[in-house]
Length: 199
Image 1 (cartoon, helix red, strand yellow):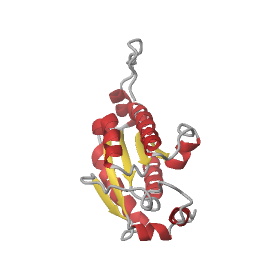
Image 2: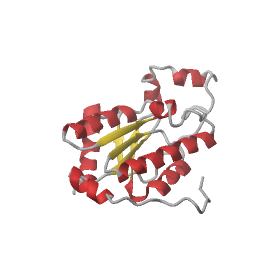
Image 3: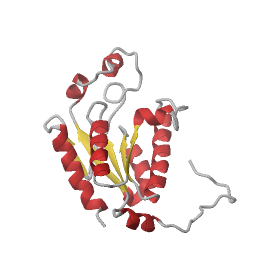
Image 4: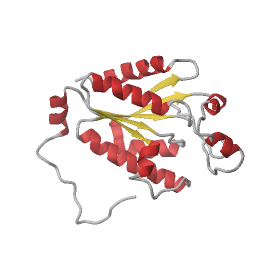
């Protein structure tokens, strides 16, 4: 979606992103955790956020359920609505990055085209973390019963069951949550982040 109005221009303020990063003592960026529902994306993102917070690093988690209660509450789960959901999240994350914040985005983003859209908005600030976990393991973690309902045909377009998930081709980092503990996965994510945000 583009805005073609010639009357709308970006405003550049007096405080730059670099100014904010220098004051914060770290760079800002977006770390996008993609993977099946139940793979551990949100758990890892929130644990990593807390670890960064405890170190004095400005960070924030964009979580799928929370975003759909507000910013994207008018969207459904059609391919078009899912793409718009991700576009909105990416645009907001770009504003947070400009404010000097380290962002975690815990969203399935199931298609290669979805992730290319995100990358087109965030550019070099986009760092893709593939939270790898076999579907059968994800199903055993499904405390809300979504997979069971999807297999029964009660939920349409459910990723991994009735809608595809394109495995990332060249993610920046892969964590294997069926083999690693939460603490091990989080530590690997934090080590990766440290190499990106250190001034």
